[in-house]
Amino acid sequence: MVTIAVPIPSGFLGFWTAFIKAFGEHLATLTGITSVQAAGLGDQAEMTLSLPTTGTWTGVGVTTSSLLSGCKQVPTAWHKWLPASVPSAVAIEEPLGLGGSDVLGSLIPWVHSNFKTETWVQQNALKASTPTTSGYWPILKKASYWTNP
Image (cartoon, rainbow, N blue to C red; front, side, top):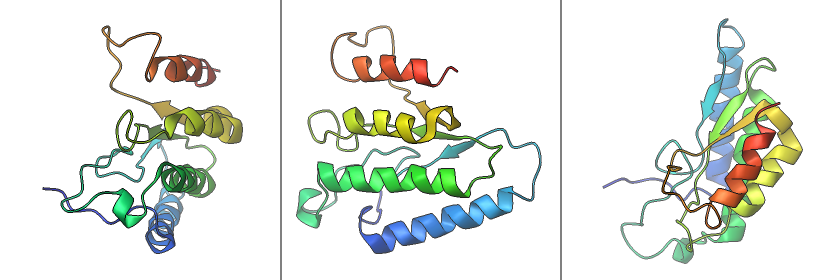
């Protein structure tokens, strides 16, 4: 079982962005850093949220809208606090799974329009059997052109 905080309240996001700021300040003292895997709001290094141990995510205020808002704050903090020479790589996933939330369709173009190629988008679930006309594929195919300047 994984226990995580509800990832969208301002208190949690405040602590998370304070960590990102401190981490960025630390990285500014180092050399040779080529990128940072920018962890999102999930219980993995991505944005995926496991099923809650009790109740539902909706029951604690987690909705597509609140997730999208939080998911925009995190890459914004990484972009703001990392040294300019260090791009972040945001591992993306539909937080509540396909059909459970609708974040990626809005988030990926938003990341591109705000950060261009300074933030890399990563999605590990693609494989040869991934449908090319539904689900993630159309969004990720378009995004793949943005991350290759």
